[in-house]
Length: 297
Ligand SMILES: [Zn+2]
Image (cartoon, rainbow, N blue to C red; front, side, top):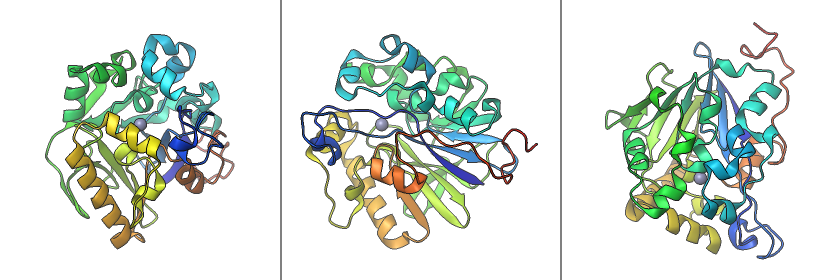
């Protein structure tokens, strides 16, 4: 198993440093990532973990995304940053992406699904159910059926998992190796999950939107006021969300050597793990150890 870190289109939220803690003022736009993973498995092709924004979002954002979120987070629409273009640039065939594992269905995670219509998509049943119900005004802004043209290829999971560190009901996934687990982290949405991947003797947990700012995982957690507000605005179950944040902090404190925990939208976490600035797409792979890269098969 090999893990590649992809930022599939940055967002530029209103509020500047009140959001990301690093913009020069609150008048300029902040910067957040859409941190996705591309896994090279030994026998099951490529696996994409979350999809960020996709080609159709880049080319026709107003037909796909809500005016409310376009104004609020102003995605930096660059085609070269979509998952499919980065995968091609790395030297892979996008048709080798056979599986996609989704943390949840918010517009900034599900936009690339339509670019891989051949892939099997894995997610929690509660996420599919609640996103499709479109119950509230905010649900209709965040969950965009326009991004789900391949929904007949979704496989959903419900309460059938095992314990993983301090988390109940971690799901192994049909057709995928046991090194990839869907770990329910309910709160941000009602079927929100992290994705744990075991690679080189260590677990990597993409905690997605279970938290937004790196320092929320510190023993004395802190968060920018803007991201605190954003998380409050979007939370579907506050108690579960805060309990899961506490579990993640305990996981990092007790098992920091065994598990690397990171979220979807923190630029500093992305840059540390990817080893490149967040605004630069993944590089072409040059070493021959890559089984799925074109020219090596
Ligand atoms: Zn998100």
